[in-house]
Length: 231
Image (cartoon, rainbow, N blue to C red; front, side):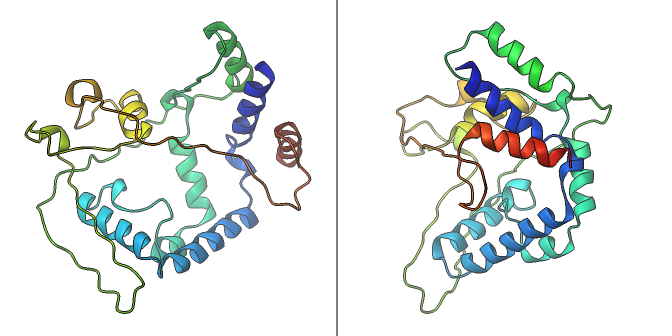
């Protein structure tokens, strides 16, 4: 158990120094995202999600997908990413969440070993604008010849809705469990505003690499990344 936790923290540690971000890696990710955006143009579900988020959240960071858009991907530079990393990735604004069969002292020792030398900077974390409720509206995204239709209905006022059983929320761990520990001011209180009913889904995540990469275990991947970081 200790070995697995240590391997995971070592992988995360490799991502902390922004000096390890190479220009060719940046261009590769940008190219992948552009290709993905082109693929999503023909997917009704993806188009519906993008339009729905934009209409619901407006200019808030929640109003666009993590992929960005064609304009932002063309304008951003590797220096922009490094500057953003410098301002936002800081131990003073970070929270380590560890879940597993380890006691608190063991997790603390392993965390200090992995992140103890992570320097604290004086910069304040960037404020994230809260999503505000927007007026109800009907929006149609015309896609002649599309193989299927998509429907999205929702609003950001679930916590303020009449408690009559007609307004339901299906949410994930990020907004309901993690965000309350990271953001001081949220427009909702998970424990006071919502009553849990049931677990709706369960997701499993796996770590994969390209077949040509000479790594067939987490330990081999960590060794490979550490070697790259020192090149």
